[in-house]
Amino acid sequence: MFKKLWTRLGFLPRKRVSVVIPVLNEEKTIGQVVRLAKKDKTVGEVIVVDDNSVDQTVAEAEKSGAAVIKSSVLGKGYSMGEGLDLAKFEVVVFLDGDIGNYETDIVRRLSEPVIRDWCDFAKGTFRREAGRVTELVAKPLLSILFPDLSGYSQPLSGMIAAKKEFLKGLKFENDYGVDIGILIDVHNRGARIMEVDLGRIDNKSKPWQALGKMSREVSKAILKRAEIKKILSLDELETINVIRDEMEDSINDSIQKLNKMILFDMDDTLLLERFINKAADAFGFRAKLEEIRANNSEPFVVTKLIAALLKDVKLEEIFEIADGLQIVPDAAEVIKILKSRGYVVGLVTDSYDLIADFIRNKVGADFALANQLEVKNRTVTGEVRIPSYFIRGEKSPCSHAVCKVNALVYLSEKHGLTTADMIAVGDSVNDLCMVKAAGIGVAFCSKNGLLNVIADKVISTRSFRDLLDLTA
Image (cartoon, rainbow, N blue to C red; front, side):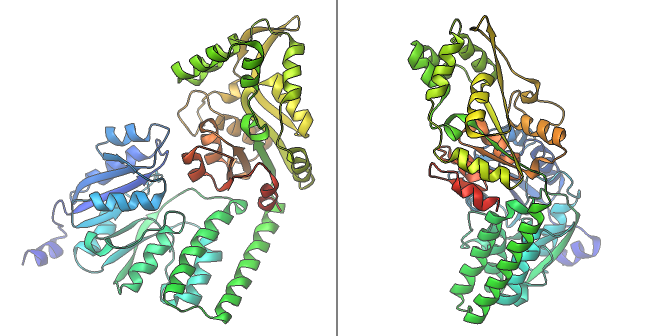
């Protein structure tokens, strides 16, 4: 009786829904998403699962009223699984944390069909130009291997809803294949699936040359499930190869039309070592250097204090150390090839301009952006100026006062590009925002787990040869 009354009057029972939002560095939008979810009267809790963000995502989520947990393993799939395990309520809604223009009733739109038992699984669709991986990879593969799913307009959408018990037992992929994997798995379980219109959503889109990783992981998720179902034949594999080849040709044609720029971090990326470490050993201030690093977390302060250690060092001594720095063996060769392919090549480093320009000339790069070390009478004064292109401004995509990502914004405006038209290569947490914001982010011999997860490409050997595959 009450169920019919709710249906007739448009009411839904209160506190039946857990909203789970996996996030990574979404400080600008997560608060708005949490507040929107909490306004829905059916929502009993909002759980934000943080993938070790380095910005203010956690603080913003907590301030907006979410329960926040740190994911035990990096990756969206693990975060979704942990959120599902913690959910207290019968229906679970998953939202993306990086969307700034959700419709105000998005939770109701997703959850209502499940609550009213119109379906077992609700898959969000939205109005925007279809993504290229969706059109060139997901839909063609689905039409061959899972034709019943080929009609879904947004098969890679991450906005979904289902009863908790229905999702338990699914194995979530831990990469770009997670959303298509869930769709296929619930289909294979015989679920009643409903595609729900969520209105217009503007989400992040990668440029053509950044699609390789996403395409591989989406394809892998689909093919893995086709193999399990034993529905792959030789003819189907040949068709898949044709699709792949056509996609690669389309990508390569589009790349040739782009203005192209590739940016390298210097220390421990282009170089096999760090200038300041070599200088500290040469001039006897290694202990003071490590003390500064251990006792200060603010980049601006660290930069100033370290520069002071170089006071009274002669310019000739600086260049002698610079000349002895080890460079990645194939750096100059690969940069030469990149330039022949139309790439502008730059260095973006929090080291010093004297060193950056010296290394730039050695490897044949076009320019270098770095902190400016003051020199008078061929002697370092111990003062350093942090250029404005490193300082946070109105268009900064992160909250750090000083960050390399601001140099990306500066260069994009100067050269008429978008940051999505750039490739950024780095190795450490200082490069994280830059690598994330670039169209292709490359983690190079990085020991930072978060950077390796964020990056579109991970290179684990001391060679830049793999960059040529991204820029062919």
